[in-house]
Amino acid sequence: KQEVTQIPAALSVPEGENLVLNCSFTDSAIYNLQWFRQDPGKGLTSLLLIQSSQREQTSGRLNASLDKSSGRSTLYIAASQPGDSATYLCAVLEITSGTYKYIFGTGTRLKVLA
Amino acid sequence: DTGVSQNPRHKITKRGQNVTFRCDPISEHNRLYWYRQTLGQGPEFLTYFQNEAQLEKSRLLSDRFSAERPKGSFSTLEIQRTEQGDSAMYLCASRISEAHLSGANVLTFGAGSRLTVL
Image (cartoon, rainbow over all chains, first blue to last red):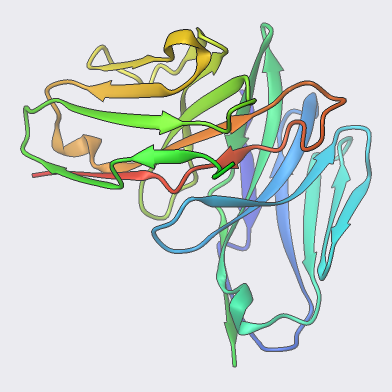
């Protein structure tokens, strides 16, 4: 059974710091991995999608990497800003008996202090 | 296209009542998912549709839960005889699976429907 773990569970950093969020998964047979952002009481917003054949994706100050063989992904946020404060979730898309299902981690709650 | 739309955004009900949530996905998205999220947790998979076919249903979904996607467009999630443990945010998401299309496989979420059972 696929399990997705995110470390740390919470993180507080001063503005301007570069930071790394970690995501690990137990079954490397994934189709893709997606990082999301969630603001309190809101839905999830997609940040980056990495296909299983890719090693990394970049969007602005965000860079996500994927190492399928070791079951890990990292989300790198450069020059953090107070507006980056949110919960960050990773999800893996696995294929089981022909159905495609996303399994989520519990998230990392990030607070960027001004 | 206004994205994934969910209604109602908030629902407060008494234990034992039935509630129904509606999700309107992005129009060309053929795959639709329902998730449940409680405070401090990641979303938990409930069920999944490919067009109008319900392909998988989590064992988390008791017989009191039912979901439909008639004609492969909007979807409804009904909870019968609600219990306090059903209080959660119910999230709907959709995606298109054809790899050659722009945005393929990007899972897009709605804002969620928050259920409070008193």
